[in-house]
Image 1 (cartoon, rainbow, N blue to C red):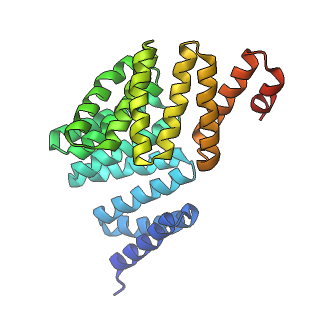
Image 2: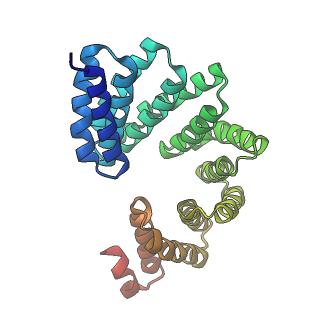
Image 3: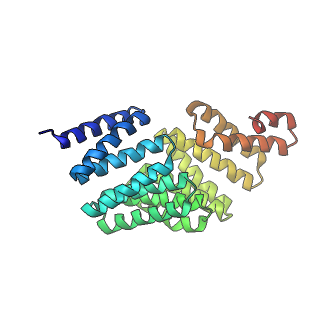
Length: 273
């Protein structure tokens, strides 16, 4: 008798290995084969793991619609087997995929459900990660004021647990929330603290985000020279780490600053890059 469960796990292992190796297309091929077997034999736990990895592979290919479809199937199974911790973690992943598609309200709803589960089961790690996502999500959705209580709670948790990564996120999100409520000086204070932590942690992406945000604070305060300095620093750092998510913002801001200061020729390489 052929061992279908073993075959399903073998295909899952191959697909997962391809995913970890940065080959999502190959991963999808094997994970789909595994899902057919695990679904047929009723191995819910393995099927959920395989679907979750399938969603992650689609995310790497920027196919967030397919990722969401996979994650939603996982949620159904997790609720059937009553694995609330994985359900909470999966809801955070689902929220990220929704935001990538611009479906911000669905993203916020997913993060909120993750936070509720975390608090109900007493999982501090899940709670902290959900607060990171929720506080940032409200800012991205243009609702800075709603971000404040979540970012404040995250900062309290971060300092109580001596978690410097959470603390840097909390300070950054508080800074952006206060910038969104037109309190630019308070925003600068929080963002500067976040920048210090990210440099201490040697988190280049976090440092880049802070520098860009501090540049935006300077723009808000009408400090064009200071803003230009921040965006120039950001451009140099981005050249080293190649963060595509911030590149267009940095270049656009540099171009606009040169143009607004009457430096038309200096602006052209940025505005038409």
